[in-house]
Length: 283
Image (cartoon, rainbow, N blue to C red; front, side):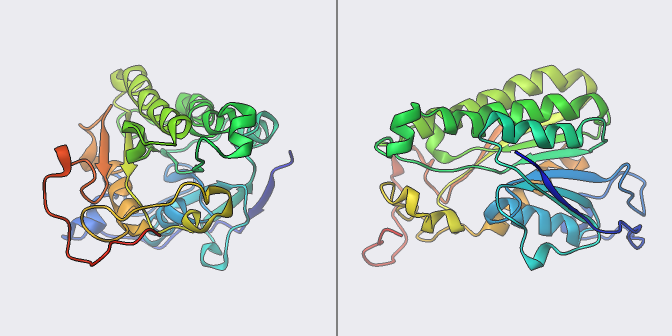
């Protein structure tokens, strides 16, 4: 599959000084007051929508150069001089090979793998391929991307964040999806072990039900989403804020971990009372 790339004229960003608020300090490179594509670039998969899009926009807002990969085109919000979009289907071998050849030899400070799909076990395509597409997208693709980027990723400053799911702990009717996301978390730990001597951190973020276009995907109709105990869906930008913290220098001593950002779904036994929202409908 051919990668379609849109590259804008990458002019140097304006100088950005350090500020006292954590949101702006958190992802500033140490001692840098300007960013350049050679040193301050993050690769974000799934960048066209949902969590990946929220991450890309947040990074751009803070002065980073961002390369995005998605099967879908980028929307107008990502029309930015510091953004490049690559179109590719990371769930296929040929679709993955194309962006790998594009980014090979490039220098990235970080990788965020947010590309993902949710399918129930009775989805015809998932039954037909025995969950292979889920595994390729959630485990094989980030492994190959990390393998490609790590040789040139800077020691002590390199960051990798993989987006998993609360369902990695098991979800009725979604065994293959849950297993693939458990694989994402296992991959994060394995990569963390490989990188710890270089000071490069690798972590996973496992969201609960998040208000993304995936909720309206007809292909996942057999996998309805119930609201978490907090009584609302999680906003993509909330997950993006967590991811961007893990990309920061302040998170340099956190590695090999999975952070469950799930609206209370991980509470042991769910003994806490649910938020008073009436019948708590499915979405």
